[in-house]
Image 1 (cartoon, rainbow, N blue to C red):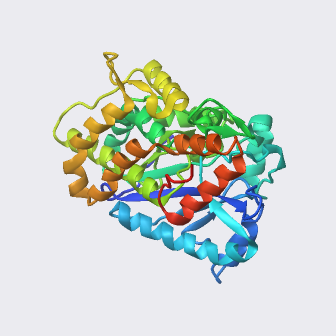
Image 2 (cartoon, rainbow, N blue to C red; image 1 turned 90 degrees about the vertical axis):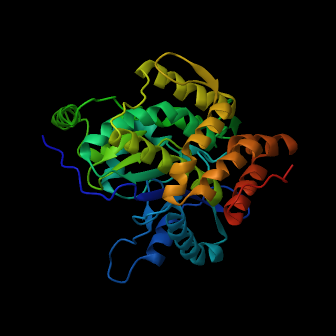
Length: 382
């Protein structure tokens, strides 16, 4: 089959942010997404352009439009959140984001009444019902289809960096998992999820999709749930690596890093230079290391098996990307990566809060709610 790739303006950006709906008093999840969506629905019955339903009724997703800067995308998201709060505040419902809810019970959650979700749960059963997880997706426009797969392969060399920075799921079902990102390893249990195949040619992707459709593994391209995937209908590369990110400042910083990396690799292709790659077995190991150790992970940097502590390599990378950030208008947002390195990623902050309060995870949820309200990480809770 042929998969057309839509025309897209180079290095435009869009962000999708999955948010949990939690009770203001208990911190547990509330199944009120349908109430929210009905209240904000346009009068003509169309889908809201910036607020969407998700798999579970405890979740809403806010999405930006097609933007030229990270700041512009952030403004779209902020307006959507303000609109949601008009509905949720009177219900005593707060917004929260992390890769997982620290203590909510997966088997108490209700699935959105939609055929595609019912089909997913029917097929995936126990694993599908456990997908009590939240993520961030960043779309970056690519103007030439032939660039998409090389850039996707190159982005795998920084997979661990993005996952470590965003790691925010150290607890699951009320237990400490020992992982910085428990979400990353849970999500890959779904069919067609996880690391992408490193195809060289677009025709290989087309053959793969044709095989998956023919054998009934998927019914549409959207059911390919790779951590990095082309989005042909938008003309973008969709970066789906990150855990849910608790605050807007962190979200925009990690989105800026993603934005700069894609634009940097696009420029390298324009200059006729080869892009970096890592073998699949190194990519798989880096995913595990960053999920397990987060900001303390020692990552495999290249096909020669050179290794470096993720924070050390991030400092080098930020210096390298500074001119790209200036060109894209996201110097300030990219600089926020230094703040995450210095103050700790969300999983580290959550662990500190839990330790300071005798392991009480409702306090952790309260902190995540505060960070969402404040729009930035809070370091004073302990």
